[in-house]
Image 1 (tube, rainbow, N blue to C red):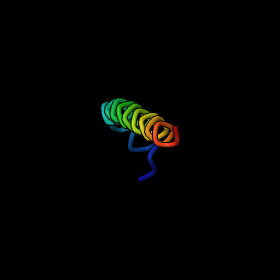
Image 2 (image 1 turned 135 degrees about the horizontal axis):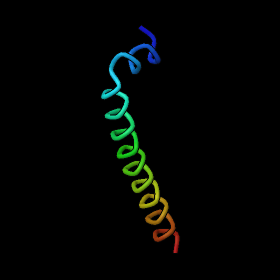
Image 3 (image 1 turned 135 degrees about the vertical axis):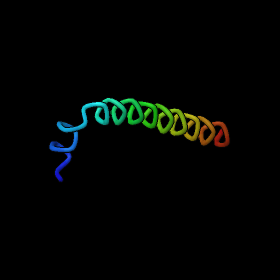
Length: 44
């Protein structure tokens, strides 16, 4: 089953997917920001 077919058949799954994708994106972005901050703190 293609993702389009799956999300058409189960619309709640698409909503959950977007919610978790946003949360994962925020977490990765936060971690990357912290890693950059720590890297520059060590260089100073």
